[in-house]
Length: 419
Image (cartoon, rainbow, N blue to C red; front, top):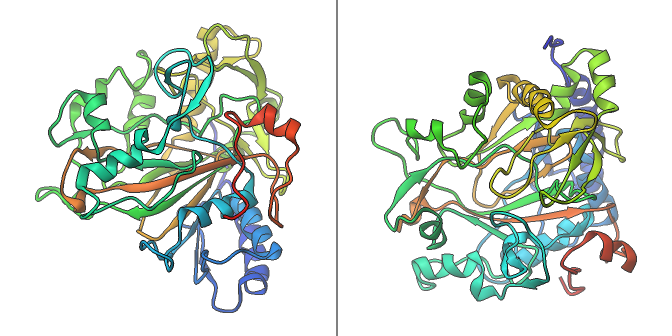
């Protein structure tokens, strides 16, 4: 695929100009930013205290900054326990400005089985009590007197960690070891109204390093042939790009805005007309969704989840409208290879106290290789993810209609007013 010089640079230049003109007016003269964080992607904001409710102008700035930079990191938050720290309730309040909150599938079961588990996902939904969620297992792993998760009960909060007995359940191994990363994906793209925004509140990051090599995790060559991750048969170039993951717990991203702009104009135009059939379960009829999505706030366009099958164990493959499954895989594998080129990649380094937000319509990401089942707190990677969909709201509380919520938020949930 022919690439243009510095794709995405015009979007970046305009984004920096826009942020420089508006940041101080919204957050005061002490607020600063750094952009880009890599290539034409990413922005770090400092001297912004998220413990306090945002004004409408502040909310609007953050919401509109996200598509312009795709990854937004608001650094320096206090994540201590108690009234002085940034609570997860306050982070959920922040997320409500971006969209309506979505309970995470790891926090409920559908038809008696994990909603994010292997195979079909159907049947009545039951939200799990806190004691059966990953956070409770993390607390039990270390003992609450030594270390505990930030307090929360919301089903919209997903605990993302490398500790606790859940990893032993998945791997069948109760001893500390290292595991490969996950697959390249976007979050919950398999619903007719896909979510657009996800965010992490970072509580802890791994500080330990291997004596040889200086990284937290040492790559195992056996991971190259892991059948759990991807369907077999990918071209060597794509396989190598997929497995090129960071080793210190960073979150790898790829910029699908720049990747789209790097393509010839006629190919961009063709992709903008392309639709793909997505399904929750293999036997479902599914629905046609655009392969290129446009942010309604900014007009910025990006490839949305351009993968044939990003969850082989959980969700069926994607079918390009008008193509067979075989042809669809060839078409989408080619796009994935393009998107995962180094010039579009960005490995985001997390720091405790960061709130890191990403736009799922305009980027893709992966989970890094991990050291699991360690009882050393310096090996702990602990974050809390919240995701949302629908229109933004600059003046809370949200006023989503009952009909829209019933259609798009399952199981039913709205953020409590006191958050």
